[in-house]
Amino acid sequence: MRFILGLLIGVALGAALGRLAPPQSGNEIRQALKQRLQPDAEEATDGVAVE
Image (cartoon, rainbow, N blue to C red; front, side, top):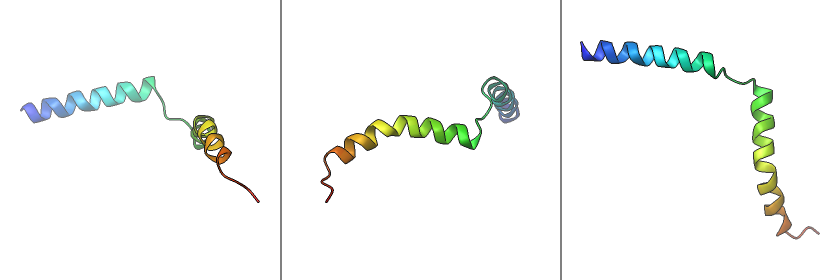
């Protein structure tokens, strides 16, 4: 009985969170990652000598 109750609560919470925070499109995810990683990439390439 506790398992079924936990399962139902989990499904309800998952559905509620899915409605509040819908998934982003692939393009939006790539743009967010690019913005987050750009400063790190620039810092990493600053120490590399290019011939």
